[in-house]
Amino acid sequence: MVLRGQNLWSIAAAHLPEGAPSELVADAVGTWIQANPDLRANPDVIQVGDVLRVPGATVGALR
Image (tube, one colour):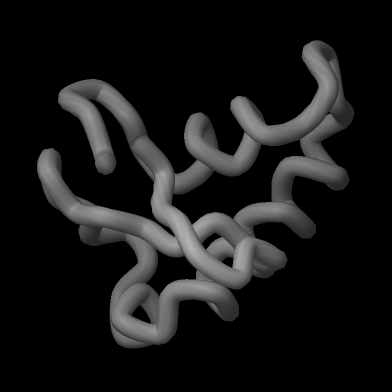
């Protein structure tokens, strides 16, 4: 679930090794967008409480 203060960049970065380069985070953001079709229209608009599917996960969500 998206928490206050989070954005797609911070969520993607949190699922990578600490200190991951920005290029890797940018690639991960794209993966998150693909895993969450509702984000494709405007990935800059996520709301507190949104439930996102973790890329590569068969069942589950970011909590």
